[in-house]
Image (cartoon, rainbow, N blue to C red):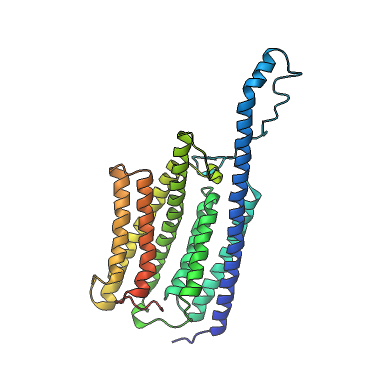
Length: 347
């Protein structure tokens, strides 16, 4: 068995910290973009309100010839540009913000450093770098960031940056603080090519579920805002004006969940085949196996209810959130506090 390269493992840890620092700066840039957007939207609302109040008086003045020029020449309430609200195509319809562009660039840089850290961890151990909770969390966080950046090539989801990069940082902190595990060899049960197939697909599915979780949370906030607007109430979260409608968020989240569900189904099937090779049975009602199946049932119910039972809006969003909480429970509480055949996560 090849010896562990501890120097390369140290470089991996260093690059992991550097990636976390870069993500932190990106998170602050995304947050600054949202804060700046909120300030801009409040200013536009105030100007629009002033224009509505002044419009009757201005019209009366124009009717008696009190204006000194063309009616539009002295419009003090015109911002000179359309309000930068989001459209149903899941993108910014207004100007592209510098803070958001810088945040995306930093996220790309952080992802590249993160990839290097994960690759070095694997090279140091001479195996795939997801054999314990530390490696699963760091690799999962990397996949979340990469999937988010790949989706950005097709859809302008920069409004999700604060939430997605924040979740990436939480996963990395959980790995570093909660599950620190020195690099080492795998136990015999994990020394199989099924580790590459089963766990890699599970990581990708979990990354997609992370994106839909963030979108479902935003959907609930947006739905509440839209309800208040219809009722004539006051809006509090102005940045939601640059976020697509609740319906658009729900539709896109449903599509991503459908893809993730297929991957999770394969994860469940591949795990059963691997269990038969490792332990001589396809299913043994181990705690990890049960919760993997629970996650499958929740997301199957979500897809079925939305497609055939009309479970749309907030009910669909809450069911998606429940599914992701089950994913988090499976990869944290189950691994840490429940003993079973899968109790080899390095914690």
